[in-house]
Image (cartoon, rainbow, N blue to C red; front, top):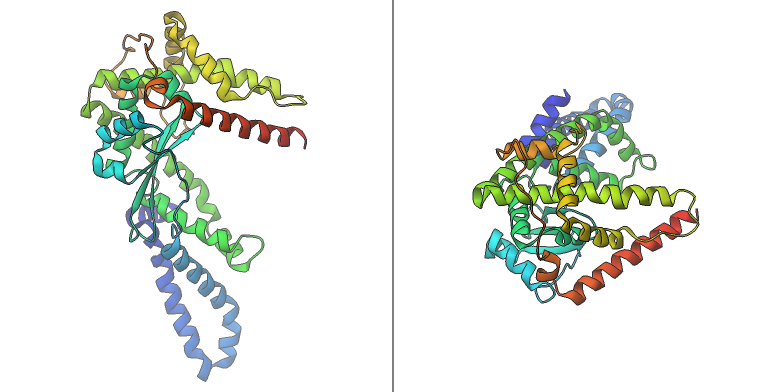
Length: 356
């Protein structure tokens, strides 16, 4: 049964709920016909029909209005990051870039999501998120390959706003936002009805995400230079290993029993990024990244699997970057302002956490 529902969700997206709503409407009409001739049956069956009807109504609202509100995220302007915007425009094209909001974050990551407001009637917007640490460990050539990977997600229609299964699931999120389980009858009934699907949804989303990553890697390689795509992937993998060893693992240790927040992770990552300019450190981390085992529960394949999909059984030669994308694509004052904001927010969260 779960396979059937997920298959329908992949094909029809949020409109999959109509397979439940239509039978529920028929049941409701039959129930109303009992009012005149069989009032006792009408009253007795109401305890079953009314929850079905209210749940179907909640589904309809979720189908129609999930994504109704436009996000108010502002992002960075072209004046603040002219080089970054120019690079994205060269990769995605002027039309796609015109409907993009570029957002900076404090993690080693790049991602893209799509917002389709009111079934797309109010237009589609892309939200391209780029981590400042990512800019610190790549150059313009590597970042262009990473942006081509993100653009491939949009072209392949596997961003969260285009993926039918994600849109189907968003309909539930809308319902639960206004009818929380545990506090409303409709929300509790709906949660009980679909709770058994959660693991199936998770497994299918992981499978689709892993497939999408491989497809996007191959698209990035085919749209440019496969060697550049592999190099960018390896730079990202190397930084991931290096930051785990030099930033996140020590930070977790320092937080145990801490009375005050330690140095924020972004500050540490930007400092550790300089160590990757050393060829020995760079290549040691690259070998560790390729030796990392695959995590079946991760939404991304292992680094070795992703490189193998590009035709590399052995890692390409990796030389340290000469000039970082952070220094060439982002105004220094803008970069410092965002770094300070991220550090301040992290410190405030940790202060609140440690005081509990």
